[in-house]
Image 1 (cartoon, rainbow, N blue to C red):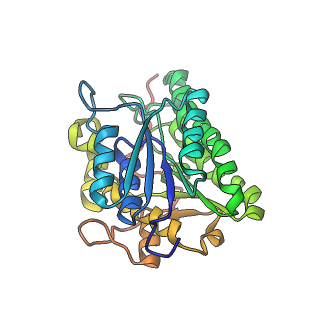
Image 2: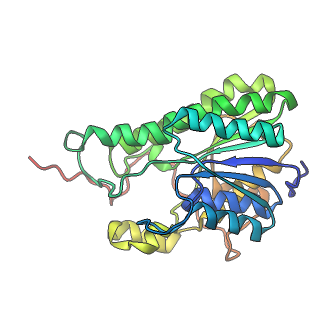
Length: 291
């Protein structure tokens, strides 16, 4: 793979029907990659949220890549194995894995203390969003080992270091970041890099479709400092094309900081300001304790 072009790259993006996953798939496609995308929704008919696997594959093809859509429930290990069996059979290797799938609840509890949220919230977000990343990475590494090169990217956020939404959400993000760091330690001898990447405040389809579900102060931050999901995709593409990416293995990388290093922009030609690494909670997140 040469810097700036990913014409020989085989990439897999989990949870790519909308949001950051779709944006990452498009960013890789812009550089010419073959992008395999998993999702549970083939088309948006009857879905509460906009976005679907078919729409992402069409966007990949329009962007200049080759899109392959695979229906997969990442809570089902056997189904995940079938995805990687398909990659092995049809492509013989995997160059990039982007662990992005995340089972967000229909209504995310915001500022609700942990003893008042259902335990099922923990199970939902950690089974598909943390455990799922571990399982996908287990299947991916054997497809990277023969060429002694590869890249595993976990999409995360500042919720890994500061209070965001609720306790289960923050622990999930922190786990994703730690997983990348520890995987990097074990993968380094094999030339495979593992990183965690933080987009900023995302202008997502969900926000556009139902802005009333976002706290007003957070919506204001997104409007002022937000970025499109494709910006994160261009960050991943830049990392995938960098022959020296192993030097970044184990790190938490911010999309905006990578833009300054690699010289890419968001779709409007601008570089959004990076989110803070400060562990102090944003003022919008103050638990509303009900006694």
